[in-house]
Image (cartoon, rainbow, N blue to C red; front, side, top):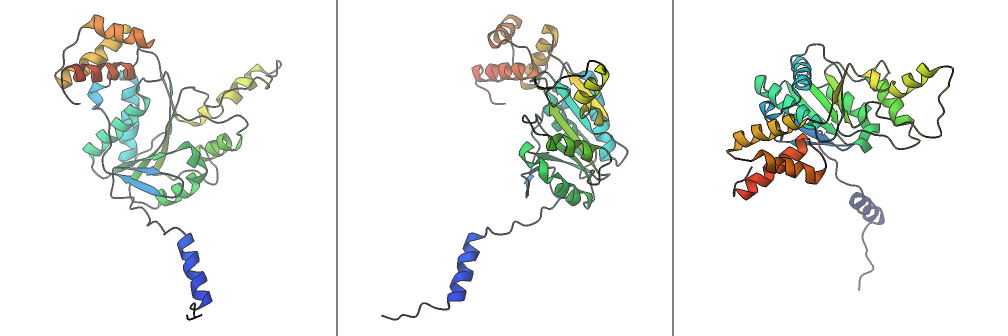
Length: 276
């Protein structure tokens, strides 16, 4: 039997090639309506899943502000970073997606949505560099943002990106963040407010939120708004419903919101043997 095992250096090189993952091609930032950024690579999204703006009921004021700001960004005009905060299930992320879809319908190719996972925040500088070189506008979307206890670097970095830091986002990029709390970063029990300077404590809590040009609150919807949301969806999908049944659905879930309304509409469609 031959002892010839080939060139040892060649075998080592082949082994190393197997260990190193293949290089992912650079994203084409002009080809898709949306992207998902994982911290290293961007995955193109062929279609933005979003309700029509007309179906988003009970948030008319918020809708007007967000859609106007997104339209400005798409047109290349001055636009704000946005913080959408407040009650769960009231359409914060759905409104952002719907606003981008509407802007794309009005001006195809002018703007794209880039969703960033919270654990990829440390990579934003590299993402901004790539987006700044692309010939279109981008809304970078961070959903349900919050920071772990003791995480000081995340909030500080986000403040720097929002306002004047050396790695601030380029002019064609704006941030949109959703959070259940306006302050984003919760106060901790061990932190003591200075009784001589209570305003300093308030400013500290809101220091990050205040970096956003637009801070838009979402609140639990009234019974009338909840029924109006259902009525809008039901009309759009050819469904019928009874108000008492819809209210019972919300009582069993302990909440009235756009999300609960959508779940009820899904139930109605299932009962009727229809798809959505």
